[in-house]
Length: 396
Image (cartoon, rainbow, N blue to C red; front, side, top):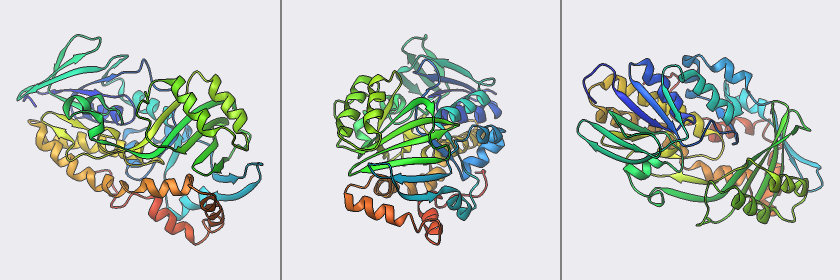
């Protein structure tokens, strides 16, 4: 980093980690620019959790009240069979109380929008563009964009998710770092009132799950299914995504015929693989990664929590270093890996819980739900919800 008072930072990605990093870097006197490939904030995606350390980061940003106002209405998981009869139920409020949690669940779109609104007055945001080349030397990084003229920055931060362009340009092709974990997730806004205002209603068949989630009174459908990696999958091709979902769920019970009709007619559908990112290092010279770009780890919610925590830690370390980002990147990575490391193995547990591979597994899961609100809740929370080794204060 140059010794001048206000170093420039390019952040790729305006999801969760990007705006969080921009907010804190601007507070520390940096000049952040956020570039986002999409024309605007994404309008689809699963509900996510803000918990643990991310709650304290959000409180320090002054946005926690807004996050709670945007929270979903879900207070329970209700498991149904193909005829719609309830065969299991979990009171999520009891689980959260057992953990002493201050977490909040909200749509990913709402989280991203609130973080963007917190950062937009102190950072430059450029939507509808992306990086196409990086070239760095001892003094900075020259960046070529798809649309905007080339610019030079003191450093670049990749907060651009599982399919990170920054990671590809600075570290190498995606297959070298991304491991498919045998599942895909898709979400669809149903644009209708939720029939059950407080329950996430879930139907399972071997290797497939579909849920209807209440989001501020409106219904959202989520599909999670086991499937080998689709080598030709284009994560921007909605018609390909529709075909994959309708093929996998054909012949299913409950409300699947209706939901598949909604899928076929959808103009906005999100689908991606459940994948894990494994990297020996998160920084190369003046380029560093944060969030899913560095360490996609989880199936249910932890990605957003870890993205916010990691962006905060990265900004704090850069503020402390000032004159050279490389030692700051190393300190950030060492600290944040203590949070991401324990979560790297959680996908298999989450998959067994939500998408059992067999009918026997579904039956066992449904029976187990009768225990969860009681003594089993504390252990389940400890092992599945609360990231281990998580500091109690948002300081580094």
